[in-house]
Image (cartoon, rainbow, N blue to C red; front, side):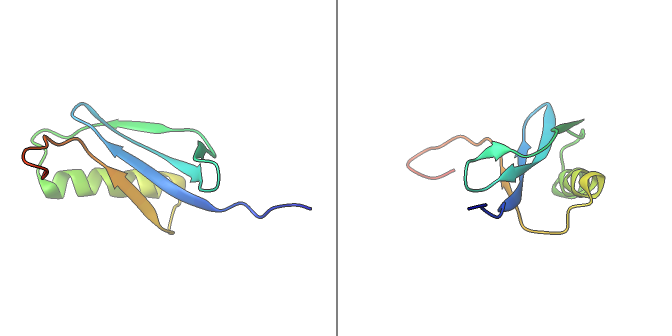
Length: 78
């Protein structure tokens, strides 16, 4: 029995680079090559959002995606 692939797109927003790739949702494994773009300076919300858009456009992605980013946790809140 073949299983239909369930793909999403993962984005890692880091201090030096923003990375993205398609992800097989049932396994959590990358389903294609990863692309890295330098994090813009200054890292304004608009500049970071534009970089995320570049990643999505590079892959021709128009589906759902998720983002992660670092943050300091203090008192249980970021």
